[in-house]
Amino acid sequence: MVFAKHLRAVGDEFRSQHLNSTDATDKMTLEEDWTRMKVKLGSALGGPYLGVHLRRKDFIWGHREDVPSLEGAVKKIRSLMKAHQLDKVFVATDAIRKEQEELRKLLPEMVRFEPTWEELELYKDGGVAIIDQWICAHARCLSTLLQRGFSAVLGS
Image (cartoon, rainbow, N blue to C red; front, side, top):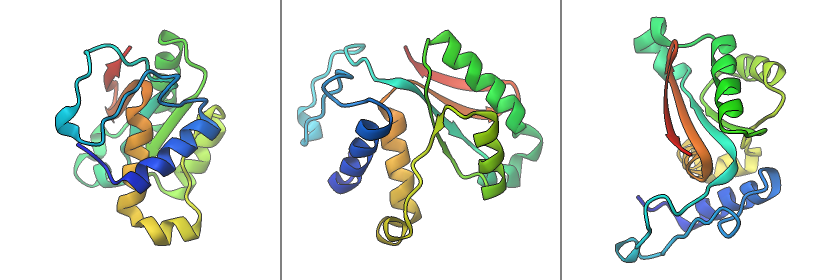
């Protein structure tokens, strides 16, 4: 999948400023014409951070019993950070503001893309979601925390 160039640029700038991550240092290559992409599997290093997609609000509606507690999610995140020797975590989540504040207290090493009102007006929720996905996709290790005690882990 190829995302809009202007949204990728915002994600790349955020990675560079907040996560010490660039395509060059992370050995990530991108060909604008996706049909010409020829990447050897395992050749990318990824940024020096854990990328986490923490499902909350939308997932709760149909799966209330499966949504991990914030404490449980933080425990899993810390375990993954230790296993992959990473000291930063980028979290993409749809958690409500109160949960985001609690998560920040429980996980001070968390980094999030938090758009200004102007950026939100310009990119809308869908654009912000794409920026989050782009940043997560460049992590050394990516995890989606879906169910209590379960996580899908990719990378490293």
